[in-house]
Image 1 (cartoon, helix red, strand yellow):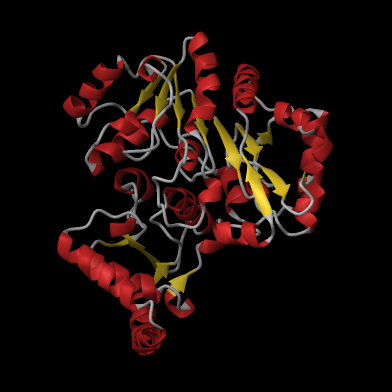
Image 2: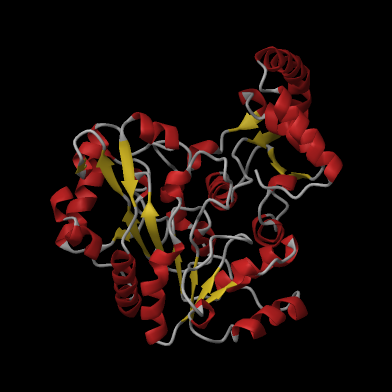
Length: 404
């Protein structure tokens, strides 16, 4: 969980998690919280409050879980508690997600950690994990009726942001595409390195877009992996090299995404911000396979390939689903199953960009025979992303036609 904490709070959190490594401490803590939850239950019942149990420290969950909850519960019979301290984009929450004061906000970090632990008790919490964390996801179906947010106007933090705009010779009025590539600099201990990708595999796509007079804006956390290209700033406006304050960065991310023509990302929840503003999405390097379709009205997904270490062959889609490999979510699970994931090629990413530009020209997705065949396979197994209105890259399917 990435949270910028004062030293005293950071020290408290580190000590707490260090102590919980010992089983006897875990048992004592559990007994204490069991007792506390028992006494707190009448209080929660009387005041009609419940804790949302999603990990809202991840931007994907903040976007999809909170919005899915609102769509699913237009008139909730209780006040949902949001642990505000953990939210990765508070500007999004304050100005878009909580405009009707739907949520009860907890800002104190110590109370937030206390409630986060209590969220495991069903009688004190509401299960928002069901929207995106289970094999059968509700979010994709719910989002078919989602009314997108209005784009941001550039009216805050002007001097700080404009300084970066001038450095990159960038302005909001130009045609530009947002690029995001998840790497090890984000949550290095999250046991989901399989979701990472190589920023350099996007260079060919960026060159192609530049030839069509698009600018490319790279977003993400400060200090992400560097682009291995001489004078790359002539090709990509890399905002991950700018160390913004949290509030400025949160606003800037929304400003740039909401005014962009397209979002090109990897297997990261960051693309969900684009979905909220109805920005077309290309989601590359998707894994697990069940997540192939982006949750977007105009979207293209490109899954990673599954290489079997035992047979030394790439698994086809029926094999992946029949062996229940399409839902694996941890590095250790792929290792246990003897599966290595292979990243998308730079050519696949570039060709997907061309496909998206054609979709934007037509204003709709018309699936080819290959895409329909892939969708049929997904319909036989997948209950996660199948309800999405997006599609999978035609070039990728042709390139790997034997897998269908």
